[in-house]
Length: 185
Image (cartoon, rainbow, N blue to C red; front, side, top):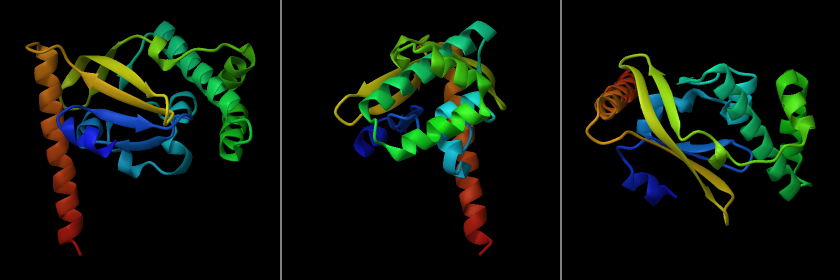
């Protein structure tokens, strides 16, 4: 997986487990979506972040947000069926149920689905470069039960330029923060 991330060094990529816990994100992803290194515990769970927590920089219409949440919960339901004895997964579901009436309703609906069913286009509201329309592809690695999310822009477009600028600005900010921490010792 690390080799894949290394090959996509200029493309925002995040890797989640079957329960949507963030395993790793590369620097371009952090530059696009905000630094994931500060997320701790349940904050690293994508379902929690979208239904209970602060969400992310993606701009959704209410209908798109409802569909996105529905697909995340449906995917988690399929994961729970594959891993019925997983205590951490049961704990996550209990936490989500107790903190999010929306999650509880979606969980009770019994709907199944995959994140691959969601819209492939995302609009990201980046604080430095504004709105960026991107293709968002979620690839599922069946044998490892991972979800790899890759953000790309159509080549030669203003969105491609904005994405490249966001990555450069964000990567520079991450490097500057690391240098400050190192020199402050």
